Length: 319
Image (cartoon, rainbow, N blue to C red; front, side, top):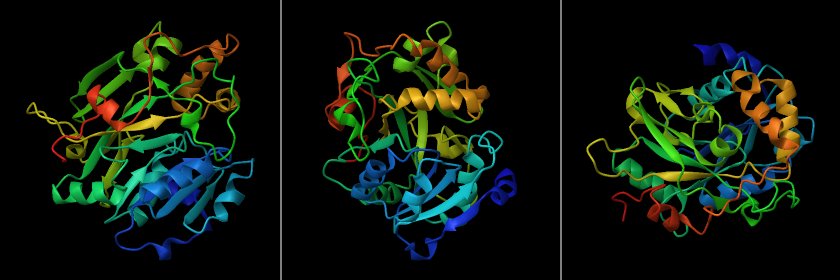
């Protein structure tokens, strides 16, 4: 019902949804002033096998909307409405997912999130979704893995179209806590560099790292809180409670680039994110120190097999 009400916020800027084919994998995202990230973001998911992007532009002023309007595989929706009042954009995503995603495998991600899954170096995304569907698996869970550079975040400039992993390719291989959310049956994961650097005094306030971005969508479904959990609750069982392992992936989170500080300042002022931008206020509180997230326990990212060996994702029984 919230999504239906919030659909009035959205204006169709460029509607190419008639070009969506029955078997297309769709990508959904909400963006604001992400022009510098979008060229690589779109290229990355096109190369994986996504065929259409449905994107909400929330009042960008940096040319984001004009750029997206030129992309022939993008349907663009525009709004100046409050991101916070739309439950941090998830009401807009739920509306678009239900309007256009029914019967499709749908990937809901931010422009700084890049999906890694078992065999992604040799098998395109449709191979994964075909296997999930044949295995009667409706949703695919991931860990949000924060990547960071070795020096100060702003030391190396990031340029539009550049692979962010050329700059930010270190991560925490441990330092994670996992709890079961009994209400929604999902796992609640916290930790990583953001917890130890920005929320060291109260790590329970650190951002959640559990996400379920890839779903064989049905209009009866809805995201509850970001892409952290869904209804019906069975979609949140992306782990095997009987002791085995289900296939899972990782969202490589390239947040910590040279553009990070400017973004943090903007969102601290806007107060449109969760808890009036508490996360961004924590970033800003440390910004003058030019914090270095790297430490001697940091791991350099290599590939998905490394993450599988570390237990951060699993190929399960997909051989």
